Image 1 (tube, rainbow, N blue to C red):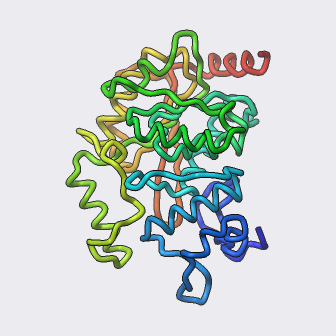
Image 2: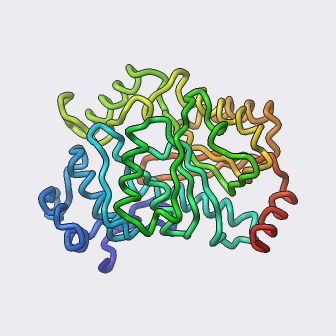
Length: 314
C-alpha cells in the first residue's frame, strides 16, 4: 500500500488495517470492487458501508491483498464480518500466547474456532499472520459448506485449516475436541442477543445511526444462530465456561468475545465456580467502538510454561 494518509485509532499495532483504505490498490487486485466506489464528503474514494454487496466486495479485496485469499464469498443472508475487527482479535490472541513464551509469539500453535461460520474469517487471517493451524467447528450445515468452498478455492489453506461439524447443538466442545487432542487456544464470536426481537432492534439502531431507512438491508445482518440464542451471550459464554472444565488439560487458553462490559461480573463468577485458575481480559477498540475478549485457563503459570516448552521441543 502507499504511504498512509490517516490512522484508525484503537486497532492493534500489528493490525494491517490501521490506516485508511487505499482503494486504488484494492481495486487493482480486486477489480470488482470498483463498481461499488463512491465519492466521500471530502472528495475521497469510499464505499457505502450500509450496503452488504459493497462490504462483501471490500472484504474480498482486503482478503486478497493482505491475506492472499484469492477467492472468498459467502451466501446471501450470512453475517459479513468486518475484517479489521476480526484481525484485532487474532493479534491480541497472539499477545496472550506470547505471554506464556517470554513475549515471543509462537510460530506453531493450534487454535479452535468455535462457530467458524460461512466466512471462515478467523482461520483465514490467523493462518496468514502467524502460520497457525486452525480447526473450525460449526453447527449450521450451510455455513460449513460455505467455509469448505472457501478452502477448496484456496488449496494452500487446506493443509492448515480443517472443519468439523458439531452435530449436537446443545454442546460446544464435546464432540469437537477429540481424546488426546490439544489446542493452544480457542476463540469464539458468540451470538450476542437473547432474542430475535432484540437483534432486530439493534439492527434498527444501527440503521438510524447510519441515517438509513428501515427497509435497507445492511451488512450487519446474519442468520439466527449467528446473532442470537436463548439467554444471549451471557448464557452462551457461561455454558462454554462450564463445559470447558472437562477439557481443561487439553486447552491452554479458552477465549471468547464479550460485547458488553456489564456482562463481565456474571461471567467472572461462573469462572470462579468452575474452578478456573487464570483469567485475562483483553480490551480492544475500533474508533469509538469498544470491544473485548476474556480468556480463562485451568492451568497455572508453571503448567502453561511447561506446555510451551513441550511445544517447542516437539
